[in-house]
Amino acid sequence: MAKQFEFRLIDGSAPSGQLEADDLVALVQSLKEVATKLGRDATAAELVGRPTKRTQRLAKLNVGLAPGSTRVLLQRTAAGDDSLDFDLDDERSFDERFEAIVISIAADSRPEWVSGSLSIAAGKLRAALAHAAPQVEFTVDGRVQTRFATVETHKQTWLADDDSSGEETVHFVGRLRAANLDSHRFQVTDDVGNRVALVDVDEDVQAGRLLGGYVAVVGSPERDAKGRLSHIHRPVIDAASAPPGSAGVRDAVPLGEILSRAKGPAAGGISDLTEDEAAAFLEAIGR
Image (cartoon, rainbow, N blue to C red; front, top):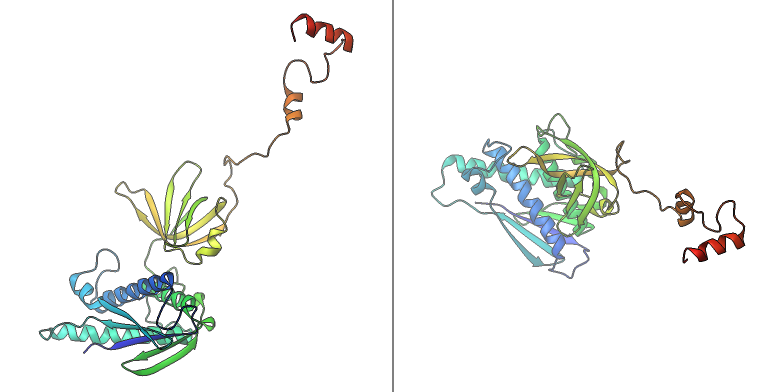
């Protein structure tokens, strides 16, 4: 029988039994990502590409809301009575590891068995919980397992080691041209016109302040059918200097300076002529 997990979000900004839409979306997406990563581990599936049907079945979740502060109810969709033995083993492994992940988030300690990709997903869940409420109580099948202050958890705990994630990373420099804080999607364009979408931007409010300026982006690449970089997932965005030789925007030049450099008579008179002679000359040419 599938376990029921419950997150009680205490002292959040929304009324009891409710959750702000952005917080709900972020929480559900992060729960789904953790579930998928755990499902891949439990079924020994590949870390990239479309999950197998067995992995999808294992990682399928039902999510609900209930009053009492705000309670987020989570239950993996149980397999039918005709489940195979390995399905039941997968389910037990999934439930145990999901519980361990949440308890580790509460303890602000990353277990050694957590892979790089799962660590990234757990970090998103930590961030979603921290944004939703200052206090979280985690319950499994009606028994409280832990209660913690989200401010005492840290993003750095779940940063994946470069050599353990098994994922390619890219470095891209350009101008931050678009920022959507609702969808957590940004766009950056380099000086030769290559446009790259940034997906699942963490700390997006801080990154949004860099809009219009040069940024350095590091993250997991996605390429189009021709092998060109099209998206960067889970990017880290920092301010950057303009690349050497870039076509920056020049400061405005005063009109007087422009006229002083122009060929022809200077403003205020004609060289070698008195004011009367200059006035007579201009009158003769119809000025």
